[in-house]
Length: 82
Image (cartoon, rainbow, N blue to C red; front, side):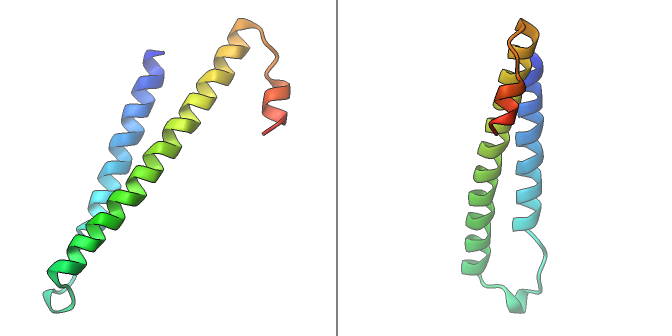
């Protein structure tokens, strides 16, 4: 399960880095007000939260399927139902 946590940590850090970069894009000062910068940061945080949650669910789902396969439970019906 350690590798599952590692993958989750890497995905969370990557998503946070990307959303922070997008939120702080350098636009000309004449076009950007303080309110726009704040709203942009809020939007990036919201999208980042959604992406981190989605990544966590996908990683957990894959870990469950792999664990079932290792134990000997047939994963074909699980994968086919998705």
